[in-house]
Structures are given as structure tokens and as C-alpha cells.
Image (cartoon, rainbow, N blue to C red; front, side, top):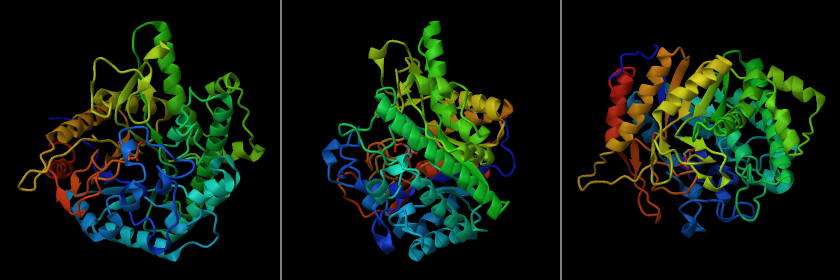
Length: 482
Ligand code: BGP
């Protein structure tokens, strides 16, 4: 039981991403996204580096949770928990099927208008991620992805279309989901870059040519993000635009100063390379050292620096799932959860997917970022991926998920006492969706169960889990009844 009170108007809610939730991948004129090609495309073959290699040929985003066909029911379910905010992404390919058209697909625009209007009927504020790992496949085929500067124009046209179309319906926006992950992982999903030897190229394991390509592509994304922020503000001063960073907490494995220094460098690179550009409007001081070490020369137009400075975000949104550790012994490095690499921390417990549970890491991260930026913050992803069992009487007793969420909400309450300006929390994911990292339905995060499994069986009917009723109480008590 926490004694700290969340501020009045705290934005409690949940999140999804279009390619993991909607399905209906070819409905109403939608084009193909990078996600629609996973496991089968030229660039994405064997992209999944975790448990579902045996499913090659199955494209999780094609059907996902069939959210596209459950709009009314799902928004009603969210309202049943008392959501104040719903974080969702727009599938770029529903609006511009190939990514580079000048005229939008009206059917795609109408679909999201319906979603946003329904949300407002239930007093749920939409929080929209403009691009969440679902860039149009044709932008990679035709232009080579974000390595090509032309994508800035394509994205700006897309974002501007959304700002204009949904003026008055949406005021909270995020430009790119986990923009720092594309950079960390070579970015074939979010940057649209080719894979290396059939797998994602990982920063630190990339050769300098790949690092050059990734950072150049990322630079274009950061410029596009800054332009979108400026346009959103110019079109409607009520628009609030946030960055979305994958919160990467990295501890030194030992008190050996070399480990401490390494953990600091990893923390800075993973979080502040992108964070500083989006919040402060310039690359951090360590960036030059990093570029020099990797023989990277970024092609920048003189106006890019002006754009970055003028397009800083209004709030800092981030995902947080787990923490990692670092040591200078390179033989120990492995996958340590949410697309991070490092070493396992002996003080923490790990899920069967290798992700640690570390609520203190969330408090550490909130404080660290608050000290650096002093911006309002939102936790826009946090949750536990687990296998759920449906009992004979159709119930799901997910006490492990409740425990996880409870501990993290307690950490947020503690961070509030530390003085952090936290304004919202959207649990990931409020309903079962396809896992981004593995393509599985069986790695479930939802507070609502979706009857669909990894053998593609199930009719997608929804069942609120025990956590659904628990979270409803949490929201009703503004975070005091945990
Ligand atoms: C983040 C992504 C989400 C989501 C989450 C959980 O990196 O923004 O899209 O998927 O991780 O990861 P996973 O689905 O791999 O368990």
C-alpha cells in the first residue's frame, strides 16, 4: 500500500501498436508494412531472433489480435477499466499504402477517425504514435529506407496529414516508437535498412560501414521528428508532442571502475544519444567521440541543426520493462531483454524470455531522466510477457502480472516523492497482441485475453483477466489501491 498520491488528472491507460494488434493487413486499401514481411521478405528473413523460428512463413501482423474488427468491443473494454488514455499507433500504410503518395487513402483515415471518436465518447484521450515499427515496405524497396533523405519528406507529409485530419480529436503525439532501438539494432524494422547475413545487425557488433548507415538513417529520422514537432505546434498550439525512447537501464556488474565506466557509456549512448537531440535539440557531447571511434561522418545540411533545435519535444515518453548489467569481459555478453544486450544481473529474477524484473530500475530511470531534462514524463510501455492459462470456467488468474505491475506502480509512486514530474502510465499491452520481438501470441502482456494461439487457432474472442479487475481498482483509486 503506497502513501504517495498520484496527481489529479494522472493519465492511466494502456497501449498497443497497429502491426501487433490490428491485423486486417490488406483491408480497405492498406499497403504492406515492414512488419507484414517479417520472416518472409528479402530484408527481414529470419528477423525473429527468439523462439519462433519454427514458424517461418507465418506473418503475425497479418491477423494479429484482429483489433481492426473489434473496435467497438475493445474500446468498451478499455472504458470498463476506466482508462483516461489509450496509446495506439497509426499504421502508416493505411494512410499512405506505399509511403510516398501525395494523396492519402480516405478509408484508412476514416478508420482512425472512428477509433478516436469512440474513444472520446468514453472520455478516453488518444495518445498516438505516428510510427511504431511499421514503416511502408515500399519505402525500403524504392529508396533503401531511412538511409535516404527523401524519407524525411514522406514522413513529414504523413505526419502533417494526421495533424490536420485529427485536429481536435488528438492532442498527444509521439513521433517514433523507441527511436533509439532502431539505432541499437541496425534498424531494419524502424529504419528500413537491409539485414546483415540474414539477421539484424547489432550496434557494437556492426562494422563501421553499418554503423555509418544506421546513424545516417537515424539522423534523418531525428530531423523528420523535429520537423513534425514544429508542424504540430504551428497547426495547433494545443498539440503536445513527445519523444519515445526505449528506457535502457544498465548497471555495472561489479564495482570495478572499468565496469562502472562502461555502464555509464552504455547508458549514455543507449538513452541520451537520441534523447538529447529530441529534448535539447542537439547531439550530446559524447556523440563526436563515438562517431570518431567508428569512423562515422554524418551528412547533415546546415539547416538540420536549426531544425533539431526548433523541434524539441514537449514531454518525455519511454518504455521500461527490465534492466541489464555490463562488464568489460566481452565473453559474457548476451541478450538481456527488450532488445538490449549486456550481462545478467545475479540480483534479479528473469522471465522465460530472459527479461529481468526490476522495479527499482524504473525509479532509477525516472530520476536520471528527470535530472537531465526536467520535462513531464510518461511511461508509455511497461508490462510482463507471460504464458497464461485459461481455466475450465474461462478465467485467467494472472497474479504474476498483477505483481509485476503493482511493483512498478509503487516505483512510480516513489519517484513522485523524489520530485519527478510523471503525468501518465500506459500498461503494455492492455490486450493480448503479437510480440514484437518473437512474433508469438503466446507471449501475452494483456489484461484482456485474446483467444488466438501460436498454431493460429482461436476465434479471437476476448476475456478480461484477473488483472483487468485489479487495474480497474487501481485507476478508480488513482493509484492508491494496489
Ligand atoms: C517494445 C516495443 C513494443 C513491444 C514491447 C514488448 O520494444 O515497442 O512494440 O512489443 O517491446 O516486446 P515483445 O513484444 O518483444 O515482448
